[in-house]
Amino acid sequence: MYNKKSDYAINKRNPDAIVYTDADKNEIKLTRDDFESEEEFLRWKAWSDAEYKQAERSGRGYYDHTVALIDDADTYGETLEDELIALADKLEHDEKCAAIVAQIREVLTETQFRRLWLHAVCRKTEKEIATMENAAQQNISLSIRSAKKKIEKIFDFDKKTPCKKS
Image 1 (tube, rainbow, N blue to C red):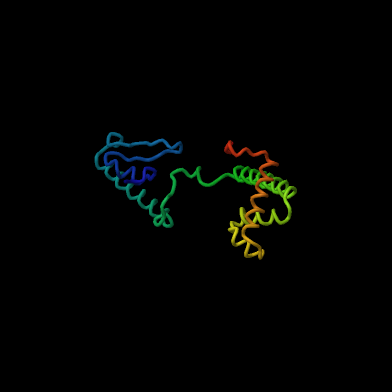
Image 2: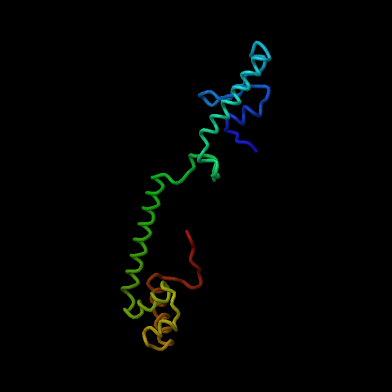
């Protein structure tokens, strides 16, 4: 496969024409008929091949050992606007989460909140929490279950209807 954007490759693949692109990216072909003689065409064809090859070699250095991940340079990365929108969305999400945590903290006791946090956020088992607090695992379990019931009440969860993602 050849590079379709390379002037050298395009010119080399057309042995019966000298091919170049103009300023508007239009492909121009000069054929044998455009020259006075066969020798003149062959002289200019050889010159254009050599010139294109030299130009391609001098501009390639760094790119010889790289692989393009995408064809269009306009699709690289996010724009600044995309990054700002993503940041604003994250901040809004973080604020909503903080408000929900504050609501939960208001209705739970300090012990219930700490145990639920350790279990749900820090992913500690009830047994690990019991060991940390020097308490019975059954008490940890009851405390977490009670905390969950309070949360279900304040957020009006219905166990029969699963949460719908919007």
